[in-house]
Amino acid sequence: MRLHALAVLVVGLLPVGATAQQDTTWPIDLEEAVVRALSVAPQVRIAEGEVFSARGVRAESLWPLADNPTVEFEHARRRSFGSAAYDYGWRLSQQLEIAGQSFLRRGAANRRVSAAEATVTDAARTSALEARLTYLTLHLAERRAALSQENAELAEQLATVARRQLDAGEINVLEFNTAALEAARARSQAHRFEGERRADAAELGRVLAVAGDSVAVTVALPPLPDLPSTIDRVGDLALQRRPDMQAAALEVEAADRMLSASRRRIVPNLELALFSGQEAGTDDLFGFSLGFSVPLFHRGQADVGVARADRAAAAAVSDGTARLIRAEVEAEARRYAGAREAERRFVDDLLLAGAENAELASVAFEEGELSIADVVVFRSTVLATQLEYLEVLADAYSAWFALSSALDARPEELIQLLEASNAIPE
Image (cartoon, rainbow, N blue to C red; front, side):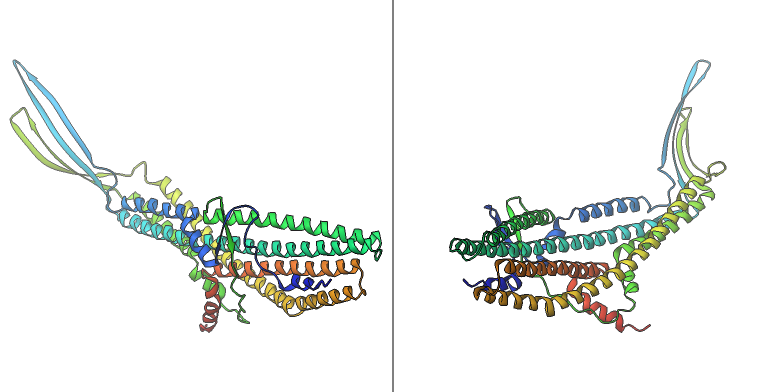
């Protein structure tokens, strides 16, 4: 019996297309999964809600009014000997800010609306990355499940051959037990990888918000790109493109304006009032008054302190975000370079050697030159190499997706973006 199927362990890595249960399976590619994930991502919906909050604050900053207008009504009775008369009056008053605080608050509100809108974009960026990484995890889990299933089938075939050889007296019990143990171990591993595949499929279903009886099945991933040999100014490029950096910078500008507005509370507010009424039932009154609200005891000290704290916090967040972005881009670029080189080494050397060894082992076993124990060792080595290769693929693809997200770009746009950044003169 030819065991040439050992070579299939190296080249036959196809994703599992259906579950053992009667679930509905539907194939979906990477970008379709991202689009669907963004349409249901809770982080994006939450960020969109914050935009309404910022717009509401801006709506209250359109007028230079310190507070709501005050409407007063007065009614009084005059009594004299043998007669009575009544006075009544209406008064409408309003305080106006004359130091320009409203312009500063309006500018701060506009920037916070823009910052909230940038946060929506950043939430979409992080949600897209989550969708891509979840899709990648399921794709590799499908390949591990398919690989372990093929390995279990081959091990069981080997155990069947070993049983016939034992019955014919060609091998001893030790060799038969080796084949039987390997078959049991391989089947156990296949069950474990199948369970992981189902768990990862459920996780992708959560990200895509699909029904519990529907199971997404991945298709082929896009090929890994080759990054430019040198990447210059990529950190500056990320700072220019990242929406969370834009939001942090806008928050600093808004905090600056709110601090200036708080400091201007030391300027008195102008109070205007209109009044009308009647005295003694005969004299009609109509007039206006002009006054100032003198900031003698309350000069906005608390507001200035809060505004200074907000300004310091906003500046700290902005600085921390900039450092985080630079470190993220540098780390992911280096991680991708290492993983890509390891992936090339596997493809060029290890996988080919494993395939050749598997074929030679098949021939040698048929010719009686290898024992069952030797075949088990060869197959285990090939399987371990393939599983390690999948780990390398996981590192390479996750670094590619993370680096693209760090630059706020789609993965297929990364190379063009990096080449354009290198072409920019100093």
